[in-house]
Amino acid sequence: MSGERRIVVVGGGGGALGRAVVARLLGDGWPVVVAARHLPDPEIPGALFAPCDLGDPAAVGALAERVRAEGEWAGVVNCSGGYAGDLGHRVSEDDRAARLELNLLGPWRLAAAGAQAMEEQGGGGRIVNVLGRAAVEVAAGQAVYQVAKAALLRLTEVMAAELREAGITVNAVLPSVMDTPANRRAMPDADHSRWVPVDRVAAAVAWLLSPDSDQVSGAAVPVYGRA
Image (cartoon, rainbow, N blue to C red):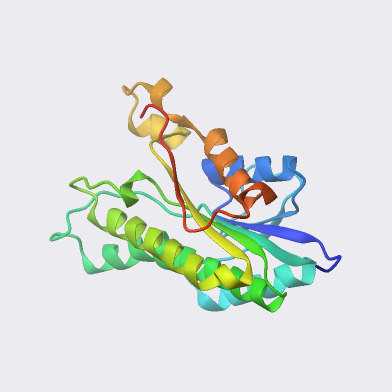
């Protein structure tokens, strides 16, 4: 291994979960690059912001070059995504395309960019995709979201198999309802004490990035709390 800085790239690092992940990784001593379309508000002290729309392949390519100029890719964490309800037989073409882009194709591009960079560096590294319980449980009224999360889980398993010989692990974290400001606004009457704190999800991500998890790949780690 070279003496270059080993960097973790966090996609969607400006949201509630992303900020918790970035804070945990910085606390663990990782150099962190936040890949997001907009500068987090407030900014995250200690993290390097790299403007990137994961829906734009050219922007993801530019991100890869920028990270490489800063050091080596040590890990990727995909926190990007967003929930929206719909019916599988009623969703519009535009909504279907936009939601698949946000929850599947964008994270896929970032994971692929990281994997390619890690291979070029000689192997070794970690990829963690944050999905949700929707990847493994069926509920009506969220068709595109569930299809995207289920597909990203299968992609996690496939990439784990493909990258095993390169020493690159690929895993997923599946939180249930997370205790975020947005979820509290959307569900003000719910029992928020049953929800999963974002720092506990971040702790699961941090473990999957650590040397202690080097024998774990292709896993889907449930972080359900009591929700």
